[in-house]
Length: 395
Image 1 (cartoon, rainbow, N blue to C red):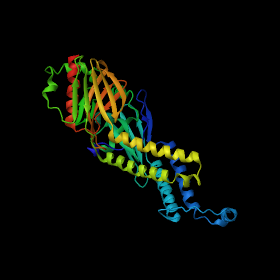
Image 2: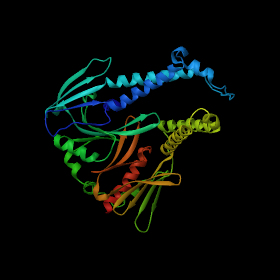
Image 3: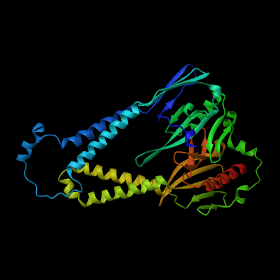
Image 4: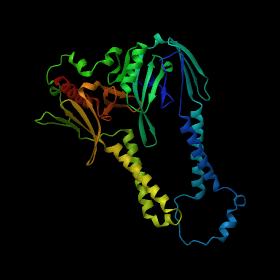
């Protein structure tokens, strides 16, 4: 499945198909790469500072006139190794940023043919021209990507081709707003099928169906009443129904994956660093400003809190007569993530993210998309989806 999901470079990209010919460049953000170069250079200079000759810096004469300190500072590694590590990290950031700057795709579209030039350092340029009719459809997929402990979703609308090298992006964003409408617009204007990646593989549908409400779609299935409750409920899901008709679905179990262990590792490392820094607070104040220490503490606490949220967050779904309300819960804290009316729902799909090997339930309207159960087994997602469809049919 991964080979059919090639990497696109941009985090914000759009190919205009309202007028032809059109042209767009798929590349990593130059602003982010420039900042990375500056940060890498600062780390390199900071690492080399220790090795500069005192005669060049004049520090030796200044240090002679400074009062001698009697505070003993214990270090785990020598200053030489620490500064060498700083230099190597800075050099690695610079090389990575320069490499990403050389990667880009220039895409031309005249309404009938796609022409692409792909450039990457140390590789020969890939240039091809492909007729539009050779593409199978307009695919919507989600790519999970990681920046250290921080992760986000990248939403991609692309022209799908059986040859992965010829898959062309149409729209890329980290925002999920209006995603369904954009997907429908591209499919309808190009008069091509709409494709998604589900738990059963690639799914294709007529682009005209994207304009129909989900209630209209499921009503044509002629499902029996309360069909969902004939299915076995997973043990890790709690289901409650009130006399007023409201229903609550709650995920009780915390599921772990590779990224969960990364969050746990971050909690241990940054938590240990916070405890160590707090126990040596007086020593730190003798060397750096009080405001810097507060900012440092706030940064560590932010990383720990983010990792906890990512690790232990659970979903609660409320089915209230004519709408779905989604809450995210961690401990005693419950945050409302979104509300979608039944009449606005255009799709409830179990999708698959190949890069993270995760399934998730996507509830989609023209204006918004809400994800549920990103770590749940596919059987649990099918049960939740059936209950929601049962409510929609009943309304």
